[in-house]
Image 1 (cartoon, rainbow, N blue to C red):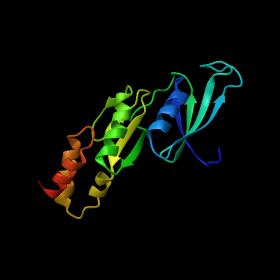
Image 2: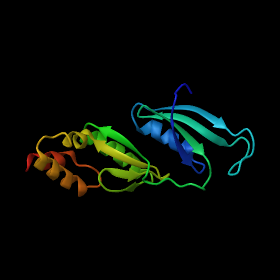
Image 3: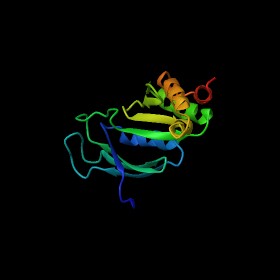
Image 4: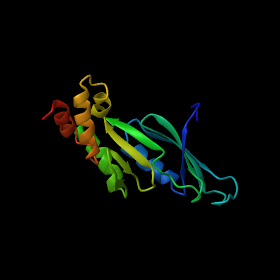
Length: 160
């Protein structure tokens, strides 16, 4: 790995499966090396997959099969920016339909417990809108959503 830093994501034993799903689903993503344990370790045996290098949306990551001692939570999430409803729907549905769960305001969780924010860029642009009332309307609309509906956000910003 030639990167100077990477996000390390803890898994029980599913790092390779998760990395393959992420790299097949998200743009600008690719699998890297799969490293096997050189000896037995607390949650596995010599030869088990220990570390998986991958890139998701251009972000270098390392999946670590560290066992069940730590569980992921919403304190860490991967935010993916989208430009269209089609892209938003495709990514959201891929995560949720593959054993994941819906949450609020564009958040969902994959079957491994990793949180994702599928975020249309209009939400980020909303905070730069000089019309503070439009910001409030857009924000209020977002708070009512699970998967983000771009047309509904646009309508709220416009005051429709």
